[in-house]
Image (cartoon, rainbow, N blue to C red; front, side):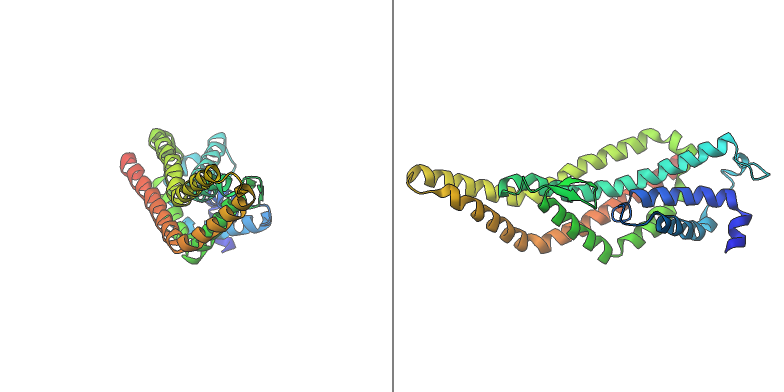
Length: 268
């Protein structure tokens, strides 16, 4: 293994840089709890597996024969970092839809003030958003989506994307990311709409009851009722949410593969 890496060190470094940038952005692996040395080692093993599938002819003229890094080679490294970040960022967009859905109805169920630090996203996030994100992560790991992302996403990215196609197809890639952000809010609304609609009906009913019977202190019973009802709805909707999460991952990886196919066809 070491002899093969040393013999093709410039190409191995290009592949490893993209793999490392992807790992630094992917959910779960991007958090600080994962040691940096573990990420470097995993990126090295990934690069060793992927390197035989990479076409070295496209970058061979820009690699110095004596092994020294030229300015163009440094620019190639920067482009590989950007490609890895783009792929990982799109996967993060898929996960962000689930935590965003929790933020939508956290205010209505009375958990808007319970925002704590989310180690997965490394931001302040309501507890409900963290719960949905955690469920999505379990579905992602149980469905072997990490392996599918590696076999379908990462492998195809090396056959379709390099620095030159990234510059040539920049408009297509930008539109792809913008469309992903649009799907983020759409998926979040689809997840949160049943609970939000039910809670709105409960709020309207409590308002009518408070007007009909002012002596009733519905405010003190309102908050625990909303919280219990929200958790009951989450319990009922959990099987459908898991199916939706699986479909979202499938659609996301299919979209990435279609992008690589379109970019490969455009580059040819």
